[in-house]
Length: 170
Image (cartoon, rainbow, N blue to C red; front, side, top):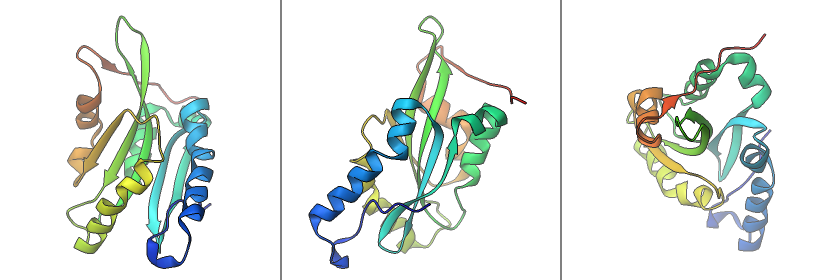
């Protein structure tokens, strides 16, 4: 399902229409992820003049996969030759404070993508990022090593925190 959330100024759409499109996104899947934790992640892509939802994974599907396979399925959606945006509900055990989660915004602009693609994703990032309130951390990745679970965990978790590993459910 594609939801337009941003259009560039050359498309003839009014600023008011763009604002309404953005608000629909905020009241849609992202709000479900943020407030109700109904989704484990959402991946966005630029399609023509719009930023659209490419794929999402429900929390129920994530529970069946387990936490490691869920993260692997998220990074598998980041193609080698194109950019993407993603929001991931990241959970960890902070020790004395218990289990915590953070919403992470990813900008995937791989070095192997065409320069035009990288520039479009980098310049359009603010249009989507401003509308996604509640994001805890923003991570910009240009290769698979920066997407690796360990690298992301080190960027966002406080000292002494441990990754929360959930086994798959039957």
